[in-house]
Length: 110
Image (cartoon, rainbow, N blue to C red; front, top):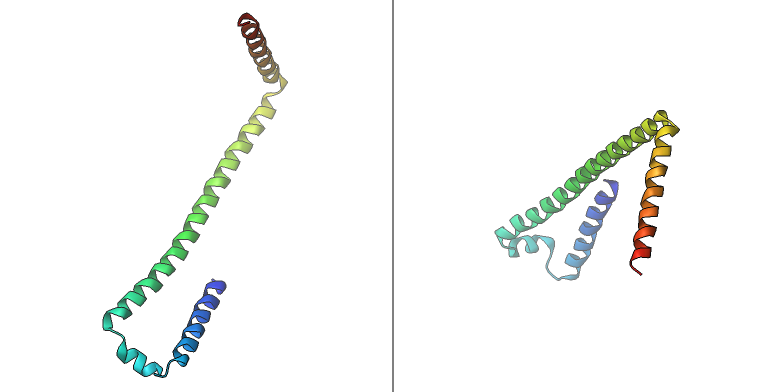
């Protein structure tokens, strides 16, 4: 949040320099500005604040989902290691059978 505070103060500083360039002072700027412009300015500032806070919340939720998926994946790996090599042999047999079937199908098409 420190970066956003610096950005806010930087914008205020730039606005002060822009206002300084005009012959009218800050007081006359406020008298020249219509009242509804203050609501527009407050709405812009509030919208920017909400965008930042919602982005941070979304990033936290996304991080929790990623961690949960990683935890589930690691549990599956641990279960696979605990079951041992017996299931690995079954998986290798299935892969070999699928490869033989693909080779057989490739030869019959010619």
